[in-house]
Length: 216
Image 1 (tube, helix red, strand yellow):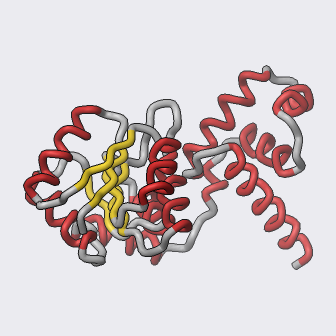
Image 2 (cartoon, rainbow, N blue to C red; image 1 turned 180 degrees about the horizontal axis):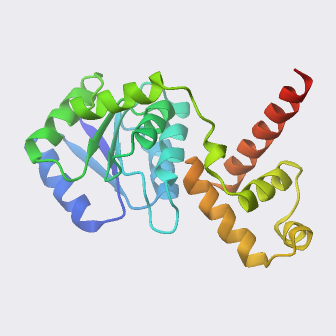
């Protein structure tokens, strides 16, 4: 493997990663500091491995959507999620989106390289404690992420499922237009989606599930 794409919005991280890759014998390191640029770069160059952060300033957990899109475009790509988030739900979402490894940003260099080489070889990688936490999460009864939304957010989500515009939602709920925008941004973070289109997809699926349960 001669090429890796690293996606992170911190220059210090990109610089440190490049030095690590030189030591690991990687010939080419491509860098991107935002998810749009990363996807375009991947689409054009198709590096066999991607190391991606999950959180980008002002974009919430948009790294999840990036991983999902890269995986959909080329399922052979080996993706390592590289993040500060230790929530097993977020870890699980990253794996569901297409990552085969997950490593924390504050690990020692030796552990990061173990994770990198494992994913590079096509093997999965999770810290032992994290793997147990994810296993426990999946063993527990699955709770819809929508359950974590507050009443106002659920109202907005319901209206989004019907194709209602931000302005019409604001008028229907007697709230400010900006409140709708901020609520949608918060919901994207809670539900682990990166764009409004993906949020609307969640809204539609939730509406369909609600309707189906009504027929049961």
